[in-house]
Amino acid sequence: MILGLSTSTYTLIHVLISLAGIISGFAVVFGMLSGKRLDGTNAVFLVTTIATSVTGFGFPIHKIGPPHILGVLSLIVLAIALVARYRNHLAGRARKVYAISAIIALYFNVFVLVVQAFQKVGALHALAPTQKEPPFAIAQGAVLLLFVILGIMSTKRFQALEIA
Image (cartoon, rainbow, N blue to C red; front, side, top):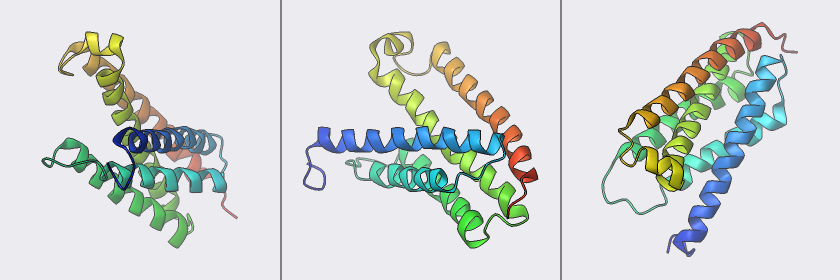
Protein backbone atom coordinates (compact mmCIF):
# COMPACT_ATOMS: atom_id res chain seq x y z
CA MET A 1 0.00 0.00 0.00
CA ILE A 2 1.15 3.49 -0.87
CA LEU A 3 -0.59 6.42 0.80
CA GLY A 4 -3.51 4.14 1.60
CA LEU A 5 -3.84 3.01 -2.03
CA SER A 6 -3.01 -0.36 -3.47
CA THR A 7 0.25 -0.38 -5.41
CA SER A 8 -1.63 -0.99 -8.65
CA THR A 9 -4.01 1.94 -8.04
CA TYR A 10 -1.11 4.25 -7.13
CA THR A 11 0.79 3.10 -10.22
CA LEU A 12 -2.24 3.75 -12.43
CA ILE A 13 -2.62 7.27 -11.01
CA HIS A 14 1.09 7.92 -11.54
CA VAL A 15 0.93 6.66 -15.13
CA LEU A 16 -2.17 8.73 -15.95
CA ILE A 17 -0.54 11.85 -14.53
CA SER A 18 2.60 11.08 -16.55
CA LEU A 19 0.62 10.63 -19.76
CA ALA A 20 -1.23 13.90 -19.14
CA GLY A 21 2.14 15.60 -18.69
CA ILE A 22 3.50 14.10 -21.90
CA ILE A 23 0.42 14.96 -23.95
CA SER A 24 0.20 18.50 -22.62
CA GLY A 25 3.97 18.85 -23.02
CA PHE A 26 3.79 18.04 -26.72
CA ALA A 27 0.96 20.55 -27.05
CA VAL A 28 3.20 23.15 -25.38
CA VAL A 29 6.07 22.35 -27.75
CA PHE A 30 3.83 22.64 -30.80
CA GLY A 31 2.51 25.90 -29.37
CA MET A 32 6.08 27.19 -29.14
CA LEU A 33 6.75 26.01 -32.69
CA SER A 34 3.73 27.95 -33.92
CA GLY A 35 4.52 31.02 -31.83
CA LYS A 36 1.68 30.60 -29.33
CA ARG A 37 1.94 30.86 -25.54
CA LEU A 38 -0.91 28.48 -24.65
CA ASP A 39 -0.95 29.67 -21.03
CA GLY A 40 -3.52 27.14 -19.79
CA THR A 41 -1.83 24.21 -21.51
CA ASN A 42 1.52 25.30 -20.08
CA ALA A 43 0.03 25.32 -16.59
CA VAL A 44 -1.37 21.80 -17.07
CA PHE A 45 2.01 20.64 -18.39
CA LEU A 46 3.92 22.10 -15.46
CA VAL A 47 1.51 20.82 -12.79
CA THR A 48 1.27 17.30 -14.22
CA THR A 49 4.99 17.04 -14.86
CA ILE A 50 5.79 18.15 -11.32
CA ALA A 51 3.18 15.69 -10.04
CA THR A 52 4.79 12.93 -12.12
CA SER A 53 8.15 13.49 -10.47
CA VAL A 54 6.69 13.86 -6.98
CA THR A 55 4.49 10.75 -7.24
CA GLY A 56 7.50 8.84 -8.57
CA PHE A 57 9.07 9.26 -5.14
CA GLY A 58 6.02 7.64 -3.54
CA PHE A 59 7.03 4.16 -4.66
CA PRO A 60 9.01 2.05 -2.18
CA ILE A 61 12.70 2.95 -2.31
CA HIS A 62 15.15 0.13 -1.66
CA LYS A 63 18.16 2.08 -2.91
CA ILE A 64 18.76 5.36 -4.69
CA GLY A 65 18.99 4.71 -8.41
CA PRO A 66 18.62 6.32 -11.83
CA PRO A 67 14.84 6.93 -11.47
CA HIS A 68 15.43 8.96 -8.30
CA ILE A 69 18.27 10.95 -9.81
CA LEU A 70 16.18 11.68 -12.91
CA GLY A 71 13.27 12.72 -10.67
CA VAL A 72 15.46 15.20 -8.80
CA LEU A 73 16.90 16.55 -12.06
CA SER A 74 13.38 16.92 -13.45
CA LEU A 75 12.23 18.88 -10.41
CA ILE A 76 15.26 21.18 -10.72
CA VAL A 77 14.53 21.82 -14.40
CA LEU A 78 10.85 22.39 -13.59
CA ALA A 79 11.78 24.89 -10.86
CA ILE A 80 13.78 26.81 -13.45
CA ALA A 81 10.80 26.68 -15.83
CA LEU A 82 8.46 27.99 -13.14
CA VAL A 83 10.74 30.93 -12.34
CA ALA A 84 11.16 31.81 -16.02
CA ARG A 85 7.44 31.59 -16.74
CA TYR A 86 5.79 32.98 -13.62
CA ARG A 87 8.34 35.14 -11.81
CA ASN A 88 10.11 36.52 -14.88
CA HIS A 89 6.94 36.46 -17.05
CA LEU A 90 8.88 35.16 -20.08
CA ALA A 91 10.60 38.54 -20.37
CA GLY A 92 13.90 38.70 -22.25
CA ARG A 93 16.05 35.63 -21.70
CA ALA A 94 13.37 34.02 -19.56
CA ARG A 95 11.51 33.03 -22.71
CA LYS A 96 14.50 31.03 -23.96
CA VAL A 97 15.14 29.59 -20.50
CA TYR A 98 11.52 28.49 -20.27
CA ALA A 99 11.54 26.89 -23.70
CA ILE A 100 14.73 24.94 -22.99
CA SER A 101 13.67 23.84 -19.50
CA ALA A 102 10.21 22.79 -20.70
CA ILE A 103 11.74 20.72 -23.52
CA ILE A 104 14.17 19.06 -21.09
CA ALA A 105 11.38 18.24 -18.62
CA LEU A 106 9.28 16.73 -21.40
CA TYR A 107 12.29 14.78 -22.67
CA PHE A 108 12.82 13.29 -19.22
CA ASN A 109 9.20 12.09 -19.18
CA VAL A 110 9.42 10.59 -22.66
CA PHE A 111 12.77 8.97 -21.78
CA VAL A 112 11.05 7.23 -18.85
CA LEU A 113 8.10 6.30 -21.08
CA VAL A 114 10.49 4.50 -23.44
CA VAL A 115 12.20 2.74 -20.51
CA GLN A 116 8.82 1.61 -19.16
CA ALA A 117 7.65 0.52 -22.62
CA PHE A 118 10.70 -1.72 -23.00
CA GLN A 119 10.08 -3.14 -19.53
CA LYS A 120 6.32 -3.69 -19.80
CA VAL A 121 5.41 -4.21 -23.48
CA GLY A 122 6.11 -7.83 -24.38
CA ALA A 123 7.30 -7.27 -27.95
CA LEU A 124 9.66 -4.46 -26.92
CA HIS A 125 10.89 -6.39 -23.88
CA ALA A 126 11.72 -9.34 -26.15
CA LEU A 127 13.85 -7.03 -28.31
CA ALA A 128 15.79 -5.62 -25.37
CA PRO A 129 15.24 -7.58 -22.14
CA THR A 130 18.14 -5.91 -20.30
CA GLN A 131 17.84 -2.52 -22.03
CA LYS A 132 21.47 -2.86 -23.09
CA GLU A 133 20.58 -4.17 -26.55
CA PRO A 134 20.70 -2.11 -29.77
CA PRO A 135 16.90 -1.69 -30.17
CA PHE A 136 16.71 0.11 -26.83
CA ALA A 137 19.72 2.29 -27.63
CA ILE A 138 18.29 3.10 -31.08
CA ALA A 139 14.90 4.03 -29.59
CA GLN A 140 16.45 6.27 -26.93
CA GLY A 141 18.83 7.78 -29.47
CA ALA A 142 15.91 8.59 -31.78
CA VAL A 143 14.01 10.19 -28.88
CA LEU A 144 17.06 12.26 -27.94
CA LEU A 145 17.57 13.38 -31.54
CA LEU A 146 13.88 14.30 -31.84
CA PHE A 147 14.09 16.42 -28.69
CA VAL A 148 17.30 18.15 -29.75
CA ILE A 149 15.63 19.13 -33.03
CA LEU A 150 12.38 20.14 -31.31
CA GLY A 151 14.36 22.04 -28.69
CA ILE A 152 16.33 24.06 -31.21
CA MET A 153 13.32 24.84 -33.39
CA SER A 154 10.90 25.65 -30.60
CA THR A 155 13.42 27.76 -28.68
CA LYS A 156 14.14 29.87 -31.77
CA ARG A 157 10.48 30.33 -32.65
CA PHE A 158 9.34 30.94 -29.08
CA GLN A 159 12.21 33.37 -28.51
CA ALA A 160 11.02 35.39 -31.53
CA LEU A 161 7.45 35.49 -30.19
CA GLU A 162 6.28 38.95 -29.22
CA ILE A 163 5.02 38.63 -25.65
CA ALA A 164 2.40 41.19 -24.72
